[in-house]
Image 1 (cartoon, rainbow, N blue to C red):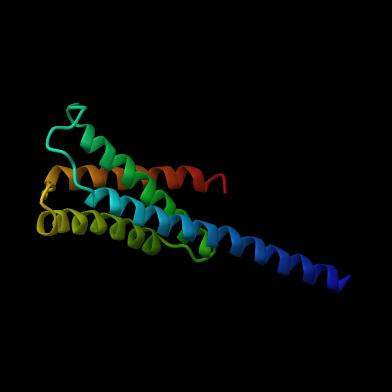
Image 2 (tube, rainbow, N blue to C red; image 1 turned 135 degrees about the vertical axis):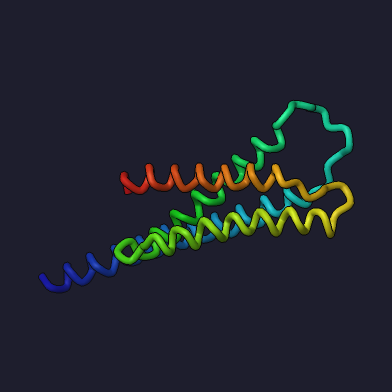
Length: 139
């Protein structure tokens, strides 16, 4: 009887680790992917000249970025997940957006620093926080 309980606890822990590990790989992969997107040269005349499309894309990319990392940290230790950890993840995503904008200005020729991109990133981060809070209730 005791062996079955031990097996249950070990299997539960392995399952938790594999889910969290998958989320870590997804978070790292996604962060690398969007970093690549943010530094990819853009043609001066794009095919679609929709106003604010760039800002919507920034918000959507940061929405998913923040959602993934908040979920990863939450799954790490649900019992000790605090508002400090939540704010750390949120602030990290926000500063990532600022650093990317600064690097675009300094290290690329076709992209520039845009304060409205940072605002769009922040909106995406806040939407990611909102999504995380809604999804967390069902975890």
